Image (cartoon, rainbow, N blue to C red):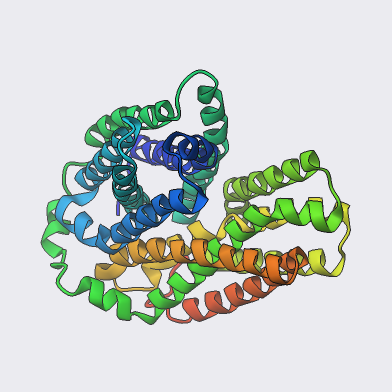
Length: 398
């Protein structure tokens, strides 16, 4: 694929800031939503299930959507569905409707993520581009709670969703102006019909292994981010303020890892696969050290370093996907892997909490160590299924 101008890439980054904002505001708004609707934690949790269902549906259909609409209109469709869900939420519908419209929010988000991962994965220097893309998700996730908390001082929680919906307008206009109307004629003529693509994708060992890898990764990332605050206070006796700053440092480390590690690795002549393997080794070493040497100072520094090494893993897995499957499966493979990762993000943090309740919160680090070893094994097995070795897997990127 030819290198595009700067505008589509910058729009990709801006879109992932919006996706991060969407993820970041939820934790702040949920208290106001529960109070407004008079529901408890379990009931409001229904919105998570419907949003997740929409997100997974987007992963399964992204390849077919991209084939029929191409990048420009697929992104426009995704942002339109997300905007519809955001505005429907902003009008404060009845609770049953609120739960239902989160399907639109999840589907729109999933389409945007999947299509942009596919778009950047096909470009030169894709590993660095995808790491930056996901780093901008971290920027949005960092800004989201600040935006929500500030608006709640003056307005209802619905105003936050209205702002998210309004932010879709300039992005939609940008998609229609900056991205090509259609794929080049030669590319369209050579493109296969999507018959059986989802079936063949789900049968691919590389996709199964890649999906498992990302599910474990997201479970580890969210599990540590969710339970580290309790771990620091109950195991190391840190104050709530210090524990809170440390958890923020963990997420900041994850964002910085996505901005910094790939360019450094490229200058050092490392392949994308080699960089990810080194980061996986770093995650394993840090988790082992945090378990073996349980001191408060090491826990604080170690969690930041753990986030730093975790950061590049998700986008780098997306970057090497074109070498793991035949070209006709690539878009659907990325969509499926992106969607399935959400299962790990739900199940594994829940298991972390179950262990904390029934065994003790000290289990966080040995649990993280176990997941990091599983990650490393899945990564090596996934690379062994490469369809065709390329610069993404072997020599350094150009």
